[in-house]
Image (cartoon, rainbow, N blue to C red; front, side):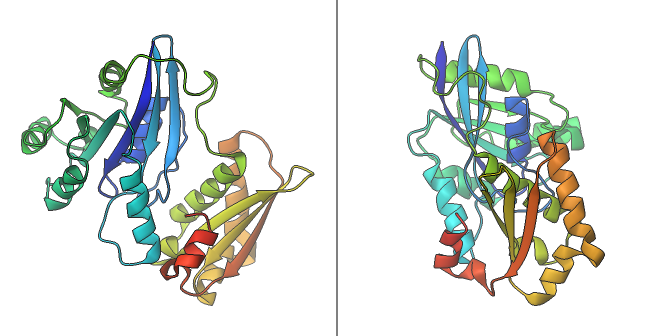
Length: 279
């Protein structure tokens, strides 16, 4: 048996979370079309008869302009410490640029695999061009993959299992993620808000959930401006109702969920507030 840690890195919006979910075989990280959806390390666990891979999803590395952005970048860089393999993800539909190479340079020296993702949205010629463009990145292998359709995922996973060392289980075989129930609820609430809000609102929202002794969950939704509070609540509470339905669908059962929307001006620019919200 083999077991080890695999960190997934790349620029924002290249499909890291979708790829992690595809490799694990179940949803353990929220996804959206908004950059910076992932704000902290998320671990997904794949266990097979021949081994176990612990995937670490990371925030997209970018030019940080806020305390939150700096914390996200540091979280991504920290995730490479002590791991067995780094998976660098690039987008098949966009030119490989200085940002991709900057990310690759941050993890130079680590055992690396390069994944060209979103191949379902690119022509065969474009995919081959992307593979050629990243050929100078020092890596053990290069894989064209579509996290959306699953094409190429199985060969990638098989290769990663061969790269990690021999060893026993790092997590119980039945476990697929290491996030607490409360953390997962908070992320699902934010996922829905990312889907239904626009402009600056998605980037100004933070969520934090706690459980009560009776099993109910209270999730605090934090925004930066009073005008955003009304958007998050929705007319007649319609947005909050949609959030509750989304959470219940994703969890697969009814959850007693209380949602509270609060305003914390400029929270993402203040280190102490970013830390209070768990980032």
